[in-house]
Amino acid sequence: FAIEASSPLKETLARMAEDMGCSWITLGPGDKALYHAAAVFASNYFVTVVGIAADLFGRFGIEPSRAIDVIMPLLEGTLKNIKDMGLPRCLTGPVARGDLGTVKRHVEALRERALEFLRVYVELALKAVPIAVAKGTLSERKARQLKEFLAEVISEGS
Image 1: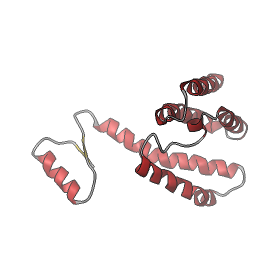
Image 2 (image 1 turned 60 degrees about the vertical axis):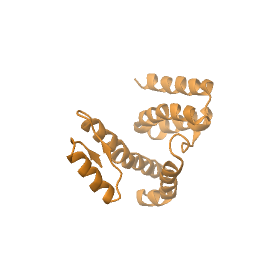
Image 3 (image 1 turned 90 degrees about the vertical axis):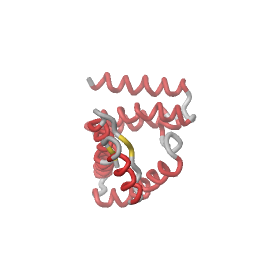
Image 4 (image 1 turned 180 degrees about the vertical axis):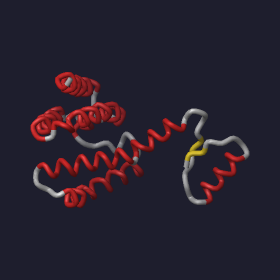
């Protein structure tokens, strides 16, 4: 829960949240829209990214419902790792490894078969770079190489 209230109501609401076994945070004046945007990223856009993955599965002949069945263990494992290990340790994949070759192959595949998702892929990869650096699995040199390549992809698409 997000509590936007002054004392003593704030304390009462916090106790109620705790009594229900819920986590809570306090919002300051003007924080509600940013809090809501964060929640949209965590929930609505998570669903959107899963939808993109299902769409990509469809590009090689897998029905969306079957795609969800196939990726559900990956999603569940990812959420468990976020909970158990936290950020940045739970990040895996080619950006976390500094695997520029795989990222390049992904970009090429998206260019050829799903161009409408290329920009989303690149933007998310760019956001993964500092997480991978914080995790300690991506050197500054490889981070720079990834960012340069991804920036080039964006500039080519403009």
